Image (cartoon, rainbow, N blue to C red; front, side, top):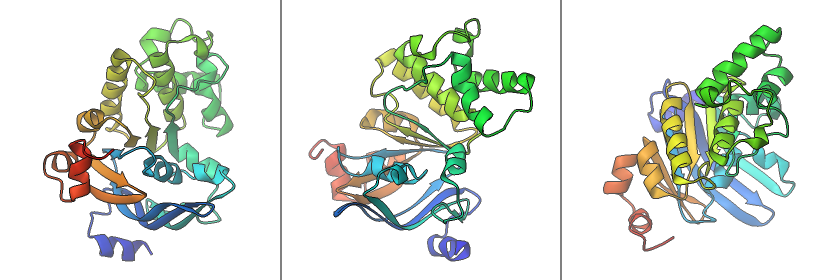
Length: 265
């Protein structure tokens, strides 16, 4: 299967993190995602853009099987992570989500201390043998979330007491604490003010050194600032995928051009 897919697309397999082939997503009778074929690269920020309801968040959620939590949702086709089918019955969705972390639109820290927010994942996945190792993971994750210096003296304080931007960076720290390989971000800045948005965007740029980052954004300016690859969705179809500069300056499909110039959306 893996060889066939690599032959079919001619992409350097070492760079490809996710491969999607002929992916369909249905909510009951509603055909939400249609015939999506895409290769998402490692250590790259990929932006999903498109009008509201175009399927970008639905497709994002299919990459860590979050759609499994919706009874009427079904996914068809192949989605491979490092060549392995993530919808294989042998794949444990909980383990998959440790490998493919997710940050949501609205910051959602647990009603626990800052420390326990970050320690939660490593604890349930058995990533630390003792308190010292757990302390190390928490500090490293908070540093990766670019929030360590702001919270290091109040790790016992509730995560819900932080500002919105700090809460979102805490959620990013929580997501990276399980040592994922991919970070999915579903409009992570839409609830934030411009200063907090700039901090999260700067963080996304740093995170690509270690992760494949996939961000759904309603802001084309944000996609242009943070991503190297962009995928444009429209009415459930992946219309165009390529280098961000090319998508924004020389789109191949007239629908992409219409969206970027504001004629549709």
